[in-house]
Image 1 (spheres, rainbow, N blue to C red):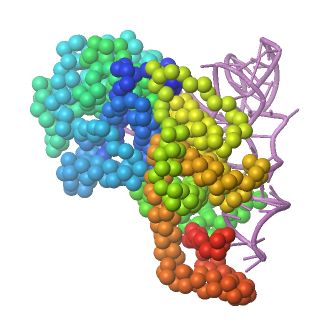
Image 2: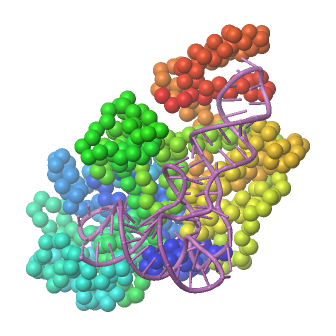
Length: 553
RNA sequence: GGUGCCGUCGCCAAGUUGGUAAGGCAUAGGUUUGCAAAACCUACAUUCACCGGUUCGAAUCCGGUCGGCACCUCCA
């Protein structure tokens, strides 16, 4: 088994064989930095972050993601605010990097900006013109699509299709309506740079070709981006790069992630659509039979169409960033995702629960020290399968004994990741492992194994599972926080949202503890009711201590 | 008009180079608990929008129908 990647160019999964053995060069189109990044950006870069992380385990990876920081939209946004385009663009670029960090995305190896590569871009255009694939009109330079016999191969359109569907205003100066600008002559008041064709700025598309060539060479391994970029952006990049380099391919594998769709104007719980023009208010319940979901303030904000500019940071301020990430990873990267509050809350609950289990495991494993961990690490090793590595047999689902659970899960997770980065499958596997771990932690494993496990076997099993989860988490970019810290932080956030001090809650819990010791259950229940009314959920443990968590306000 | 994608349990969602339907949420029983909560166990799609075809065998391949979405203009 090797890593397999769905290639948009061939419309099928292919074995991943990098051009240079052991090395991967990937380019993913970054953002045009003129506004806060939205959840669609978040989805895309989380998807490629997993690609990055997974390939890094077995290859030396160079991941390049650009910032387009000169462009019509930036110029317009800056003009609207009376701000300098360059400073506006760099402000949003910095903000984007912050957002990505909060989402747990590793920074790419290179994050080039267009304005810092004008020289390379001009040289690139010169090469295209020299090869006869570009032409100059009044200080503009256009790419001559007719010179590319393969044009349309990526998006599956013929040249006729493109012309027939062209809604662009026809520019008589262009030889063909499908020709696109490589270089745009400067207009008054716009940022511009000198060039052989006069002052101007790069057209869209060319920056990616030029910067990819600089950092990755004329032909590299993976080129990625959102599905919307297939046409015209990537189609044009492919055409112009091949023209400039005299090659017939740019990237061996073209990867495109699916879109995020905003929740429809309807019930987030049952999905019942609202009628045209019908509105709901917070507190109103869903009219669908058997639903009765009560709309919250948030639902309305979320479901209200705010176009695509639904900023990630707003979502992350309101919900756990890691939960947003988990929500994305629960769906395969090529599938569309419906964004809704209900789904996000579901992810948040799952994440909280997983961290609680992780915290429980760490509690058991901590006293054992590093030796147990090292032993588990030696048993478990999660890495991508290199095409040049010896083939491993796909593991068949079986009824594994405690010694095999970790290793077999690891095998299935590896297969899932190798199979076009199937994170949804990985999430399912980790859910199983979490269940086994909980089983052992609550000492209810008898039903599963037919016997109570002796403590050394329990510890070994927990260590194995912990190790698989740690490694899977490393690839998914999940569970990177210390479980104990996470649980504490979540509790604090929710407590604050409800306006309670940890100390006053602890005091109530302690009072109840004393009442229980005195077998004054009436008083204990009374205190619990008080706590429950404040959204505090108590979990009495076997050792007499009480764990607690706070429900969402 | 052109191009492409999708339609799997009440909801979310894997599985699509054919071999007999992962996982999560919800729900119903149960174990556990002073009572709870949490956790765990069990149950929950003979069926994959519909119709027809190929095949020993199809959710997976082919044809058609219906439904949804995206792109063709800036977009992750």
